[in-house]
Amino acid sequence: MSLENIVNETKAYYCLECGKCTGSCPISRVNKGYSPRLTVEKALLGFDKELLADGGIWSCMTCNLCKDRCPSNVDYTKFIRYARAEALKTGYTGNCTHGGVLSSLMRIMGNPNLKQDRLGWVSDNLKISEKGDILYFTGCLPYFETLFKDIGVNSLDIARSTVKILNRIGIKPVVMPDERCCGHDLFWTGDLENFEKIAKLNVGLIRGTGAKKVIFSCPECYRTFKQDYSEYVDMDFELVHISEFLAEKIDEGKIDFGSLEEDVTYQDPCRLGRHLGVYDPPRKVISSIQGIGLIEMEHSRERSICCGTSTWTNCDRFSEQIQKERLKEAKAAADTLITACPKCQIHLSCAMKSKTPIDEVKIKDFSVLVASAMGLGDDP
Amino acid sequence: MDPKIVAFCCNWCSYAGADLAGVSRMQYPPNVRIIKVMCSGRVEPSFILRAFEVGIDGVLITGCHIGDCHYVSGNLRAEDRVKMAKELMKTLGLEEQRLRLEWISASEGEKFASVIKEFVEDLKSVGPNPLGKGEASCP
Image: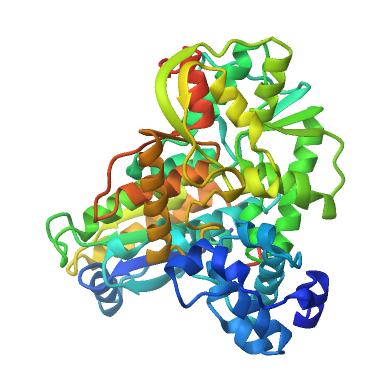
């Protein structure tokens, strides 16, 4: 897509140059060299080459804060996504974090000949099935576990906790041994060819299990299935995030979340919050735990600040600054930060390990918190 | 089947070891492509996965013996990184034998030749890399 088409598609020509985007952008606040307004302006004035070569387009966290506030409804997030796809064709890429190992993993998963062995984490006390109505999509958690153990993040606890909670309410979810990564990061970094392969493989695999409802614990997978897969492949199953699923069960009176004496605060993941508008279900579930105090941070819900970096590109000192400011906000609210996104947990935990120390905030995943309140936390 | 191998050799010991095998005219199979790195600790899990992604059948990482590293502890890092890569490979369903870590000093040309011979035989019994035919496209 040419830059002119990108401008037309995202209605960037409505831009008033008011600069609200740059004023809201969490990155612009710490990195004066980055400006969403200027980026759009470059496209409008026809500086195509400069725009595509600009490393700034890879810094955007695509967190939708600017899009929400734009008075002209310019879809800057989409603009960045298209611009990245175009830049990739021209030979530019962002700086892959972790040496590009995660991008490699995603591309490998696009290969139909791959036979994964993903279920090493399923212990005997977890009850899963091969075919059934309800499927739990684990996403990249088994890979995150290996890659981020050293910063103290045990991503598979999220998967175990989710299965335990589902087991408690009498559900034996299908967990697929060979599911692929959802392709979210390929999609957002412009590698649409591999994304399409992954989308088709995943939907085929889910169809094979006969599932009617797919539960996600990762907001990125949830968003990708819900909004982006439909362009490439037809789906005939219902999609739901674990927080929405549990909130529904509260209404039906089918679940008791137990009790936990703790003050917590909740980080809205950008994909779950601003991208999909799911703000209340996680809060409803957390508040249903007896004895828990849910204290909001200064910036929460629509105003929530992102975890500093996304799509495994361009993680730099600015990301760290955003993360640390977010952690300070969390500390001011409560000692424990709950997030519903495995990546928020990884990024914020990583910031905690940085060389200039900050006050310790415990970072827990939503499912892990709920499972431990229900008394399901301790057994492996 | 003719396996393709990528070998990462450290500048200070193993590359010289491979060189010695060459100048001494030791015979070993031609299935290996050598990439020189300054230290075995430089080899990230991403290098290894990238090799498998593009269809390489086996990856060999060689470095100085423990205690002999030119950078004191680079080879210990290599050990950790290989361990991590093996875990990732296990989840991906790639056979563990496809990745091999060996310590080869500058005087061990013979060991280099025999490691390559052994590795080629191992890979022949494991079979081709399943990712080879899918031709994953890489930006």
